[in-house]
Each structure stands twice: as C-alpha cells, then as structure tokens.
Image (cartoon, rainbow, N blue to C red; front, side, top):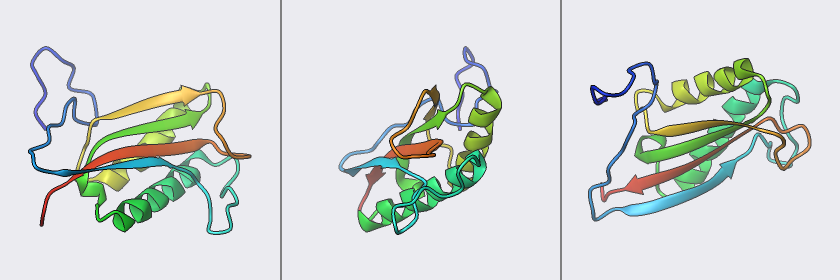
Length: 130
C-alpha cells in the first residue's frame, strides 16, 4: 500500500484504488448481520455482527463471481455514537479483508434497517478474467 507523503500513514486501508480495464464491476448491497431465517444475529454485539456481515458479504460476492480480494471500495456503517464501537467493527472488517486493504469509509449512523442491527458493510468489486 502506497501512501502519499502528504497524507498520514495511520490509516489501515488504502487511500485509493484503481481498476485496470476491462473489468467487470460488482456492486454489493450492504451486507447485514442476518442469519438464513432473516433474524439479526448477536443483538448488542458489534464485533459478532461485523463478522456476520463479512460472511454474508463474502457469500454475496461469491454468487457474483467475486471475492473479498476483488473489493476496491467498502463502506462500513455502525449504528453508534461511540467511537469504540466503530473501531471494534472496523477491526473485524479489516482483519477479514487481510491481506488486502481496500479503500474504506467508516461511518457512525443513527439507525440501520433491521431490528437490533448495529453493523452493515457494502462493497464494490472489480473482477478481471482469471
């Protein structure tokens, strides 16, 4: 990961990503911490919900012929006003993407769409013929 000299080196993600064309873009809707029945898993547990979001994101990407390694941008939403909750969710997401570090945005939001939902992760992937 190259960081321009004018930017801080503390970020645990890339500042930019480029896509060599031709590539097929895959836009993944926000992956939610839902089980197969549609119930929100681990109410109150940001880390466990982030982990389930990443499992569900990986499954959605696979159905579209992509992997976490193809992700060129992600956004992580955490329904909390506490920075520690955002950091906890980010640590799970970051570790799941490793060794890749795609550009990512981490946001604290007021509320998410499902009962007891604390985390959601969306992504854009670029898939090249393998």
